[in-house]
Length: 197
Figure 1: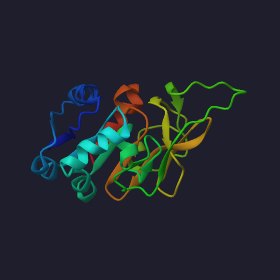
Figure 2: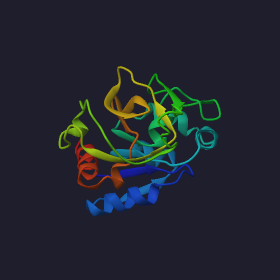
Figure 3: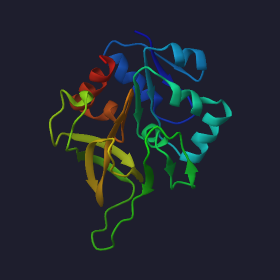
């Protein structure tokens, strides 16, 4: 099985590589269109800023290529947000696989929740094959200031200030806002389930 990780100058590829190595899977980090198209599985991770990331993808025409991929694709954190339609982060048009907007958390003064959300949070309402070996209310590791709204493509929900999409799925595209590669056994189970698709 050939696994490719999309390179687009966004952080976090190293921790995803390590998570795959722990599962005995070698992956290539690449922005080469042919390598991405020929991979059996594609992972689209990322930590960073939406407009800069989209500029890099557009410059290399990877935004169009990603949307046209037919094999299983897993977006993680910023990767999930970029698969949505639009992000409030610097008013950025994104790839548009998911017809959802990405918005910034607004913390109510009375509860003083810190933005970004950093740390463990539970996920509920799970309904996707990638959650086959994950329990309702299992905890995942999140680091983010922006979130995808709830919608028909939502496959898991988390709450921080409000309910939002912790995971999305449409056709061959799977996406999670949290970091499965940093989410202990439950996160590893998600990666394994994705690789078995």
